[in-house]
Image (cartoon, rainbow, N blue to C red):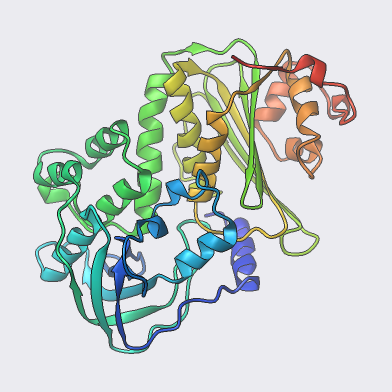
Length: 400
C-alpha cells in the first residue's frame, strides 16, 4: 500500500481502539466458521481459527456480504468482530497434510458453525483493525484445538477433490454460482484450491485481493465485448460513515478510484487516488485492496447488464468512520450498483448534481484525478464550470 495512505490509516486505527472480548487461557465457543492466515514470516506464518465465546449459529459474524443489506450499524459489526478470538500456530504454508492443516480445512469448508474447544499457551491479548480485512479480537498461541464435526459445503468439496482445477478457474466457477466472496476467500486461504502441486495456505489479506483481482479481470474480459452506454449515469449509496458515487461514462472501459477521508480524525482532508486506462492495470495499486474490490463490484453490475462504460468512483469517509476491511468498499459499491441510476446529458450536470451529495467540494476530487481530468479536457470543461447551486435536477432522469 502507498506509504502516505498506509501511515494515515495506521494513525486512524490507533486513535480508535476497539474493546475486545476478555477471556482466559481456555475457550469453549463456536467458530462462525472462520480461519485467519497471517502473512508475516511467509512461508512460515501464523495460522488458526477464529472462535467466539458465543454458541449456536453465528455465521453472520464472518459473512460481511450480509451486513449492509441487513442494515447493521458500524458498532454492531465491530461488536461481532471483536468478540472473535484468533487462535494461532506457526505453520509452513506448504504443509497441508498435518492434522492442524486438516482442521483448518474442516473449518473453512464447513456448512455450519462449529462448536470448538481451545486451550491457549497464554491469555489472548490485543485486537486488530485495518483497511484490508475485517477486525478481530485478541489473539493467542494454541496449545490444543478441538472442533465438532460437520459436513462440507458441497461445491467447495468438489473444488477440493478436483486436483487438476486451477485456483483461478475454481474462483471464477464459484463466483458464477453465486458464492459469497468471503466463502471463496476462506477456502483459498485454507489451501483448498488449485492444482495439487500448487496448493498452499494463502494469507488472508492476499486471498482477499486475489479473489477481487481474478474475478475483476475475468469480468472485464466479458465487459470489453459489450455495448458502451449512451449517457452519463450516477449511482449513489451511503452507509457506515461513507458516501459513494459511481459515475459511468459513455466511453470504453477505463477506471478511476478517488477516496477522501474528511475530518475523520480532526480537521484533515486526506485524498488518495489511482486509475487505469483501457489496457488495464499491471502494477499493484498504490491505494491497496480497495481498488480491486471496488473495480470488481462495478464490473459485476456491468457484466450483469451486458454494458460497457468508463468508471469513476468517488468515496468520502466521514467523521465516525473506522477502517473495517475492504468488504466495506466492495459491498457498498455492490449495493450502490443495484439501484437505478440517474442519467445525465453531460458530465458537467452529473458533477454538479454530486456537489450536493459530498461534503468535500467536487473540484477537490477533480484535482486529485487523472481519468476525470482527461474526460473534462476532452469536453473542454474547467473547474469553474461546476456550480453546486446549478439547477441540475431538471436534467437528471431516473434510468430504466
